[in-house]
Amino acid sequence: MPPFGHERPVPLRGRRAENWAEREEDPMAGLYFEDFEIGRVFRHEMRRTVTEADNVWFSMMTGNPAAIHIDEDYCQKHTEFGQRIVNSAFTLGLVVGMTVGDTTLGTTVGNLGFEECRFPRPVFHGDTIRSETEVLDKRESRSRPGQGIVTFLHRGYNQHGDLVVQCKRPALMLCAPATS
Image 1 (spheres, rainbow, N blue to C red):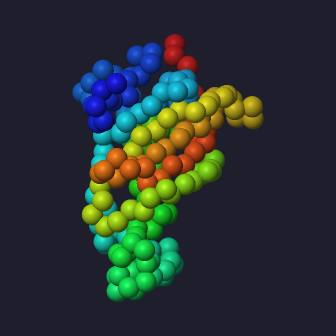
Image 2: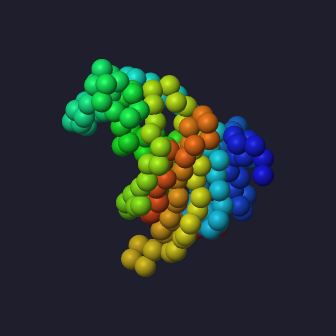
């Protein structure tokens, strides 16, 4: 397997343009339902360093005034970490968001949920997060012709390689358009 960040999703049946100049006819970066293979792992190139502003703004915008996210003095004196931890909802959103360009951009009908979310280690200001996605399952929709459900397992890691978040996400995906 190539080192992290060197694998790009490649369409399975060549429906996509080989280079960006040819993509005008097919502007969607996401893969169709048929393009996903159970067991395939995407190692997403995008990485992002989490800032203090990310954490404080997100916590305030979502109405979460917990001292563990916004009060440095409190955290230094009263928590096991001695510093603020990043809001877990931000971490989840960041990790899933970093996967979209490689997998579902323009081909998702909608998310069907977030399941079995786990946060085994905290994220701190200054941590750099990367993500990977594994395809766990897929099936054609029984009620929506031309669409299918793909279940993804998203994992986020910090710069030390520690798992900081893991979550299953079933998504309703478009099937490939019929070609003439």
